[in-house]
Length: 206
Length: 243
Image (cartoon, rainbow over all chains, first blue to last red; front, side, top):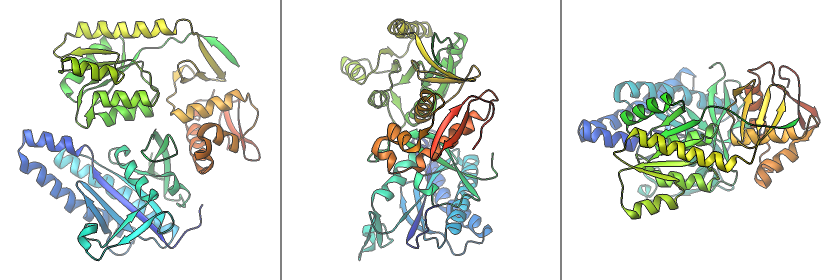
């Protein structure tokens, strides 16, 4: 396992599977308001469900939303230990699965996500803005190859599941979560080709 | 261990269309004809299957998909070295579109509405052309215990059943089988499979070895993957799997 760094940032991204198709079908079948309501449910329920799962694991404080980009919500955590990192990922895996099932039942779409971590600084720069609107309201932005990698993985995540990059494998104690190879993909701008698609699973899950 | 034979398995078709009714109809018709059919509703699903599973023998691809176009999928496939014959289904019938599709790597083109009989005939023709191209190249197999790798078709089987492998899982098994029981160092495996990019991340080898071990563990006739020297791996005959 890689030595844990105090400067580690964990990003947790969740978005709607095939949202463009969902909007297109909803518009023609149910009228525009239907998909707007569905998206509102997504924006409201996902943070609540994730916070609930975090509370069950005694993870304190609310989950901070870093960015909202269309149908994608990206949360940011600064874990203090490898164990907390794993617990945050575990809560995210559980919460995303639950939210996906709930939204599938209510609206007919699923969610998928990516969890990835990297050290602030080094190859990844943090930009702080005096005008918060430049960063979508958060006051800062993260830019760098490790940040990009997670966003490249988003579209490959399975329905109801969470992908993680290779680097997370050496950061996780893997006592509560394991990473299973489920596929490969060529990711734009990523030298390692094909890139392995690793899904996070609870250790006890089949 | 290296032997030559001819593979004989059902023809696998990947059917990609966002219209669920047409997809079901065509799947039924193709299965009635003896094809083994998998389906996808969009470009991401198609790409997912092309990357995650053993490649199909034929691809039936709709032009209009919710997240991209058929020609884009085809072009991306060809750029990735996937040579599966592609039959495109489309409502576009002008010369410009035909040229666009053919230049993207499509092998044949069928304009909607079409008869199922014509679709089946075109698929037979595509498969025939593929067989004719391959007829002078008998399959080369690497065999160890119940595991067999077909180097010609780039497929794998375990005790006669298809063993779904990812591209690098297959490549890794080829390396280990070609070593014929001798130790392959992690460094050499990383370099041969991923080049310099792989050396930067040795974790990747652990990931693939773990996945292969999992897949081989389903059958008693599987060869055994084991650490046989300091940081070196080998695949040897014998039931079960050891760490």
